[in-house]
Image (tube, rainbow, N blue to C red; front, side, top):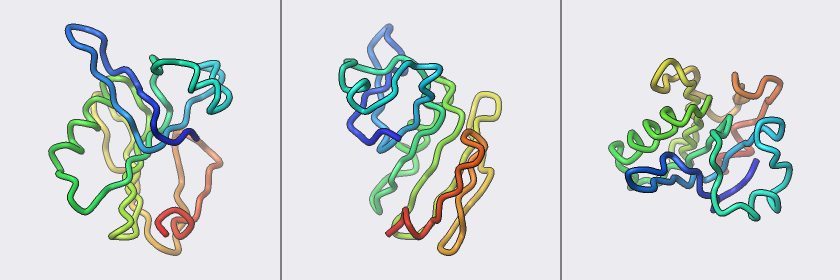
Length: 129
């Protein structure tokens, strides 16, 4: 997992568009990026992460979140986690066709499961604190 800031290129033309997820997972076999230092050497990432994590703030607008998810879908991000410290939940969205759809909602006491990263099993409590 790589924490922000890291620019991910959504498109180059007609105008450069990037996003900065709060965290992302880049498959080293697809990207060649193995460490944070490898990522820092690049001005921006031009491949889709397998997973992006967005930390939701209490004032985040649903419209801005929808825009981020639409961009991630266009890029081909397999999974997005929406972490709400306020609600103490993690919503897991998987790419289905051209958009992301909810495949799980996890709260305190649960373990987050990921389709994009099989075998990943994280306690929600350790993330939302």
